[in-house]
Amino acid sequence: MNKSLKSGTGDIKKLTLNGEAYLGYLDVFEEIYGYELKIGDKITLHYFNGEEKKIELTIGGVGSSDFSKYSSLRGWLLIPQDIYDQITAGVDSTTYLEVTTKNHIYNENIDNKIKNIAQKYEDISYTTYSEWYGKLKKQPNLLKIYL
Image 1: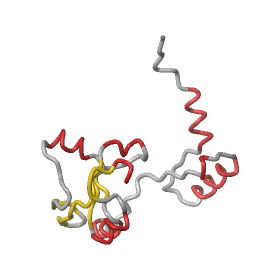
Image 2: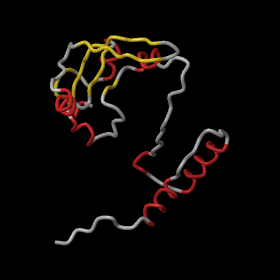
Image 3: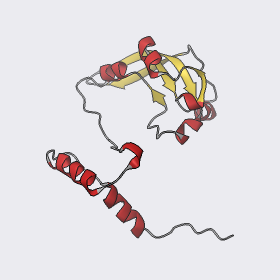
Image 4: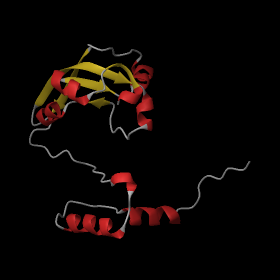
């Protein structure tokens, strides 16, 4: 997060210690909503977990959309794990889990380990790297560039 930090902190330990949130797409937020959140601004999250609830958070860090160059941010607002746990208490909110290997090393042994884990749990669906790559190679080229 520090690579695209505009102000505040991108240090998750500091954000967690202070109970603060990080807004990863400040420039997009400003374009859509017409104003810019600043460090120290308070926001209120309204959510439903069996009943309507809300929680107030302080913005502790903001970054630009350049953040997407370094990670696949799956939301604009990053909150400390303990606050997330409070919001989702009793709810399994897992929708996606990506497992990668050090240096993106691939081999059949890794595929087999993923398959063995997934077979133990009926709710898990998976795509191994070899399956993903095989499908990718079969897709037609949708874009051709002529120079």
